[in-house]
Length: 242
Image (cartoon, rainbow, N blue to C red; front, side, top):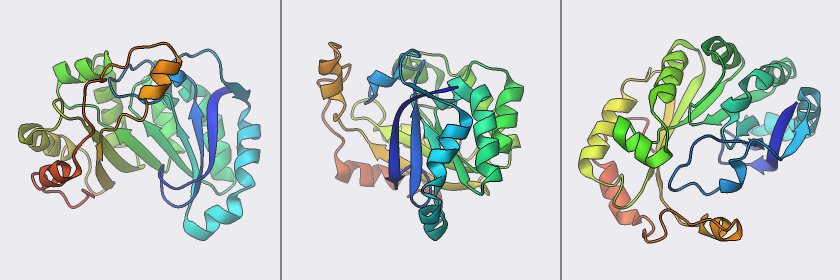
C-alpha cells in the first residue's frame, strides 16, 4: 500500500502535458524553504493499492493522450516508498501511461530497488538543493551522500531528466553559486537533460507553519526578485536552462 498525502488532477507543472499527481506522505528532508511541512510525517495520509492508483489515473487517460501527459509521483519524498512504487510504475507502463518522479533523490531502500524503479520511470524531475556538502546540509538538515548516490544511479538509467533549483535571497543567489551550479548540471548526461529551471523562492508556505504551530525558518527572508533572477541566469551557459 502507498501512503498518499493528496492528489492533484489535471496538473500542468509536474511533467509534460496534463497530469495526475500523487503527493506521497513522508519526507526526511527539512528544507528551510519547504512549503509542505504537513507531508513530513511518514504516518498519516490515505492508503491506496497500486491498482487503485492506476484505476484513478486511467480515468484521465483521454486527456493524457491528447497532450502527452501522464502520472507523476511527488511528495514529500516519493523515494521513501520506492519498493511500493515499483509495482505501480509497472502497471502504469502496462496501461500506456507516461510516468514521472518528482524527487530530491533521497532514499532509504537498497540501490537495486532504485535502479529497478527507474526502469519504469520515463522522467525524473530532480531537485538540486545544493551542489556543495556544507550548504546542502544547511538547507536540508541531511548529508548530501544519498543525493549523490541517486545521481549515480540515474546517470546509468534511461529516464529523461528535468533539473530544478530554488534560488533563495542571501542563501543561493550569488554569481559564484550559479557558476558552480552549472558545473554540477554538466555532470549529468546532457543528452537526457531536457530542462533545467531556476525557481524563485517564495514564502507561500509560511501560513502552513503557523497552522501547524511551527516557526518558519526563513520568516525574515524577502521573496526572490525576478529581475535579479533574470540576471543570475545569464551566468549559466546551458541550452537546457529555461
